[in-house]
Image (tube, rainbow, N blue to C red; front, side):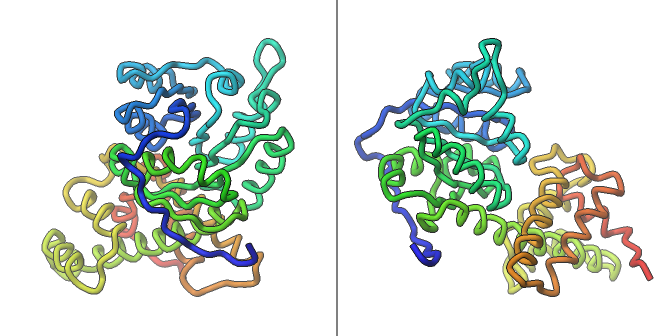
Length: 319
């Protein structure tokens, strides 16, 4: 296709299954683990693998099968979901060798499909796709959004770019994982571009929300009441309600991280770089990127990104 077209893929939940309901998931942290729980509840056979053995053990209690090395996935299932965080981790998943000198990539062949779910650069997605497709396997560029709670219920969103053949073949799986599923285009990489656009806006909204609630606090307003007004008025955004709702309800520095500060630091930076490569730079993106970078450098890197409120409460602009 010559241009990106976004089409909603209607849910087929409840329809007869047309493909083998077996899937492997590499990376079962907040999002990957939630996807695994959701699929297990829907009757899928799920193999899981993660460097954190406690996460895979917990999922085994729900019926997941624990795999020991990425190379095993090619024999376990035809559809592999990679839900790690960085492009470097994706490369490790594909290329890490077992004791026999085998890796996941070398074991892929025609009939295999790999879903790339991390938020990484479009160039990295296209590079991985080229390598995977060289083995004869298919690639579904499918970054995800919505958070662990929605992922566990099958209500997160997926931004999918792949061939129509792969979309049709995996529609049952995609609709069990997410609602909505957006078909962006047949160009692998367009899903990643869409996700970076979304996450830069989420980052801008989060920084703006934390800034304005910090201002509200300084002028003597009750933050709970102020947030309620925002949620019912023109300043509303999902990320404001979700992140600031959690931050206002308790100490944001004590929150169990659902999304670390470093994730939006990474995603906003990649989005800004994507825009710059295309010759575009707006007034807000760079400010959001700097805010996440500075918040992480201040010691909040391992905190939930709702801790942006704590960072901006004590913000001193540089002259």
